[in-house]
Amino acid sequence: MNKISVLFAFILAAFAWTPAYADTASTYFSSSQGGASETVFNLNSALWMYTHLPLSGTNGLTNLWITSPSNASYTYVYASPIAQNKWHDLTSLTYSDSYSWNNIKELGTWHTVFSYSYPSPDGASSGIIESSFTLVPEPVSGALFLLGGGALFAIRKKKG
Image (cartoon, rainbow, N blue to C red; front, top):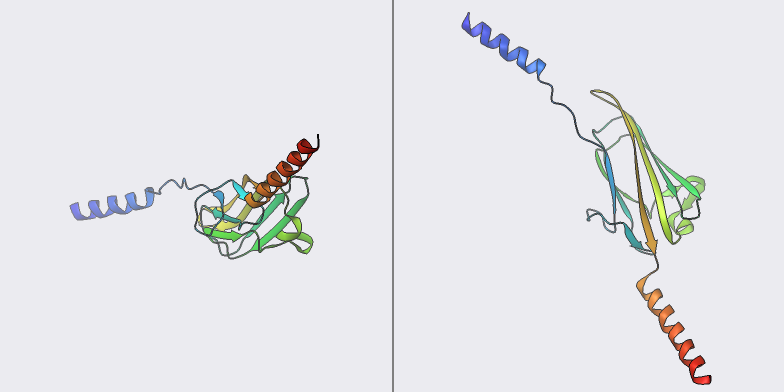
C-alpha cells in the first residue's frame, strides 16, 4: 500500500507541476551576426536583427514593419517554420514592393515592429516587439565634410 501511495503521489505531482512559462519575446540589433546589442550604425555597415521568441513553431507567420525617418513604411513577411532564436540580415531582405535595403536606407532613427503568431503546445503564441535603431553618416564622410568646411573657412578668412 505504501508503494502505491508513493507512486500515486509522484504521478499527481508530475501532472500538477507545470512550470510557469515566463519566457518573453525580445529583439535587438547588431552590426554582426552573433554580435552584441547596438543602437547606432554607420549608413553602410551591416545591420542584423536578433529575435528571440517564447517557443519555436512549425506553422506560423512573422512580420517585420520598418518605418524610415521620413515615415515611409516597409514590410517583410517570413512564413513557417518559426525559429525560437533567429538572426535576420536586414541589409539582404527584400521588403514590400521589392525594395532592397540599399534603395530605402536613409540617415536618422528607424522604428521597427516585429510581430509573430504561431501555434504552440500551450495554445497560440503571438505578440509584438517594438524597437528602433539609428543610422549615422560614415566617419570618413563626416571627416571629409569637416575638412572641406575648414578649407573653405580658411580661404574665406585669407581673402577677407
